[in-house]
Length: 296
Image 1 (cartoon, rainbow, N blue to C red):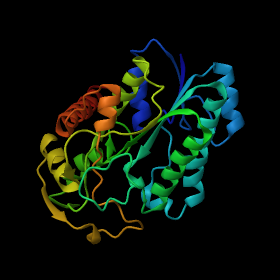
Image 2: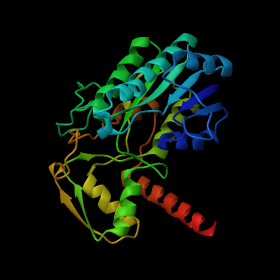
Image 3: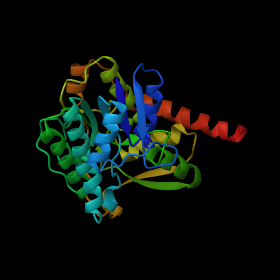
Image 4: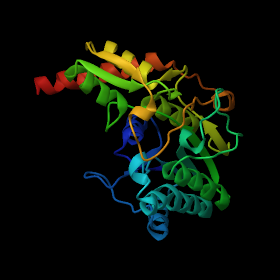
């Protein structure tokens, strides 16, 4: 099978490059960044051309506009990437009888309940980012293409910018920090999400159209997450809990966005690692990369 991965230079895109090495399928990786094949996913004809030229049967869409705060004043760009482009990719797959695996977000929910979010729950995004991601889900469904939408949350990895890398740096350079404790969810190691996507592909389960939730197991606040990152990184920093209101933001974030993963686990037969176990793996990768730089 020929598989197109968009957004290949992002966190999940990098991890998809890793899993591709162990696959018998052929992968095409595209991104706007240097060193990748180029594909304008906002241009349907450009997608059609690549799908035809490379005989693409499956697209894994890792591309998105993810700057939650900036999206509030940049609706047009956020909607183009999160909604229009998602619909384009779905249309291209519908036309050739292929499948789209698309990554969405916990931000489609209001996050005001205290039980894990289920796929069947009503959506009510609080900001532009969540609204455009929800619109993208709806655009995909409207094409009638075979699709798997995976909503995830609090994504981190050794790649790009993310909370783990920021906290490692801040706890190494600051004696004290304040981190919010009134936003509760579950971190997601991008490597684990890529493993799940690879499992779905390799076990030929891409026909199971629908919306699924995935994060690591467990529950924590950003404060708890920061404390464990600091400890595992060998840093000493006095981290104190604070309210979200102490950090004014253009957009309200969900207060409780733990995702119920029961449907994904039972449908695809996967086990989900506990969040601190995956965090340890990521921090080991980051430290190994740091050591390699020293030796270079």
